[in-house]
Amino acid sequence: MRKQFAVIGLGRFGSSVCKELYKLGHDVLAIDNNEEKVNNMTQFSTHSVIANGTDENALHSLGIRNFDFVIVAIGDNIQSSILCTLILKEMGVKNVWVKAQNYYHHRVLEKIGADRIVHPEQDMGIRIAQHLVSEKIIDYIELSDEYSIVELIASEKVAGKSLAQLDIRAKYGCTILAIKRNKDINISPFPQDLIDKNDILIVIGHKNDLKRFEEEGL
Ligand code: ATP
Image 1 (cartoon, helix red, strand yellow):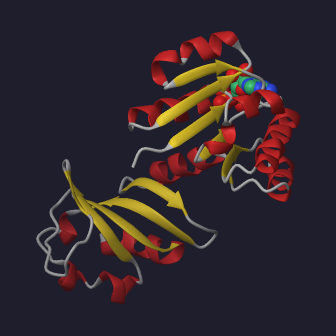
Image 2 (tube, protein in one colour):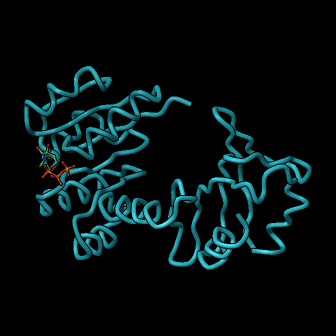
């Protein structure tokens, strides 16, 4: 379903979010107070506007309240990021996602009602480190301190075996959510489905169980 997004702050993070949402077919309003940043985004957004994210009247006249999601990607200027978030929440924007610079910024954003706070540099760092330490890990998403989702490459060891034979849930306490094979993705694998070498298994579980499965099961 087509959704309405507004991205405030078109640095590297904000512009990537904006381009990807637009590519996925959504309506995206790109906002920055820097004219050049706005001009660079005209072909990658539905509308691009020069405006200050801390100017309540400007946000009001852009109809920001009606957007499904507003992403605040103002980076270095923490004060502006906080003020912008506060204004958006006071205006009644339902979903405000904000990029945080540090722990204190995060805490303030939490207090003023940001719906989701992201730390792209840290998150990406963790994912890349996970990928670096194991050749089997393709991607890694942290769900909480204890649980995550990983993409693992199936080795020779599991090739030709069915999910039922491998009995991963009983042995390792992890669940295979999906199996990717080339461009195909099987999002509700059956117990009798066979795994091929180099299939990508998308697995959810406790971090300790996932580690055990990756080291011993694959
Ligand atoms: P990135 O790492 O994503 O490049 P950054 O952390 O370096 O970002 P900045 O470059 O400080 O972040 O800010 C991101 C963008 O936000 C810039 O394009 C900047 O012009 C814009 N910006 C800063 N303050 C405001 C504001 N008050 N209103 C709108 N845009 C703003």
